[in-house]
Image (cartoon, rainbow, N blue to C red; front, side, top):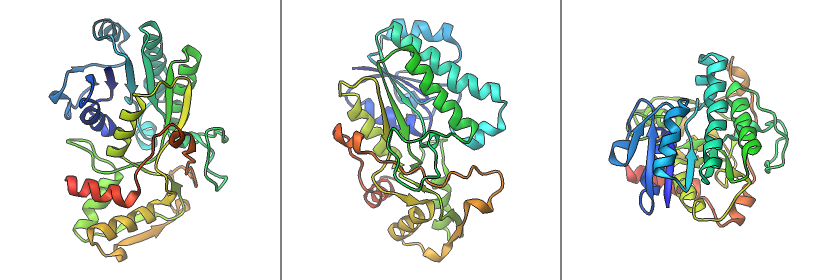
Length: 293
């Protein structure tokens, strides 16, 4: 199968390169940092340049496009002009959907759990109320709408908080927590925000299984099967690496100015599991990527 990956040098993208290249012909796109893309068929491109994207589609003729390229978190989005964030997360997504439609390719789009209303205090299914609080989450939801307006050959994945260690230049909050704990530095973690986190390498594995299925027109919660706070995730990490839990300091969302107060976007992933795609447990996954590194 021919698979085109956008954001190929990002946190998830590099794991997708590793996983999908095992049994597929991949072409991975990146913008500035190359990451591990140099190990595969790759092109450096600005996805806003539709004139360059169109001939790539015509030449490579992908069966599936996995679209991860984005302004990828609330903090980064807030540092940029609104129109830039909208253009990258919404306009480019719509153009990519049009190219997929024109070239008979399925689009798998990574959205976010932050599109949901996080005030209900219960596990959210795909029909739960939507209420994006940040510019980032709003534009990811608008990206979903652009796709749905364009065609039906898509899978939208509302991805949970991703943990694990980024490859090469890529890093995330979890990486910093691990580094601090490893050298005995205290770490502040929210005890009152709940997510259903998914490990980076397990997310790539699950997507590699999704591409084999004959699914279209689906919006799926895409995360782990455990509801935890960041503090609880930190406790599990401490247990697995032998760090002292006293290094973990509880903080509340309400203590941080400028942080979006999304209390609980833990997701019900029954639909994902019903399609035969099931995540591994947090403890097992932490052991896997610690041993991997």
